[in-house]
View (tube, rainbow, N blue to C red):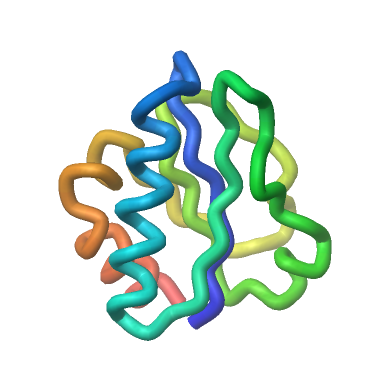
Length: 98
């Protein structure tokens, strides 16, 4: 499965990047391609492109705040804290949604 998504937290510091790292590792362990944009204190990094969205099977949103720009895709939203605590469960949730 090709997963794209966004991680973000209200302060845009630690949880944003912890969630990104945990989810990417869990997704790759399960054999998926995964690209996550971070929307943190430094602004958007590793931004999701239109091509990324076109080829994505599903979009994962692991946030504690509002995000934009993912119209037209199946979106699964989880809390950023849940992404850090149990990223494997988040990936399984995506697999079931596709």
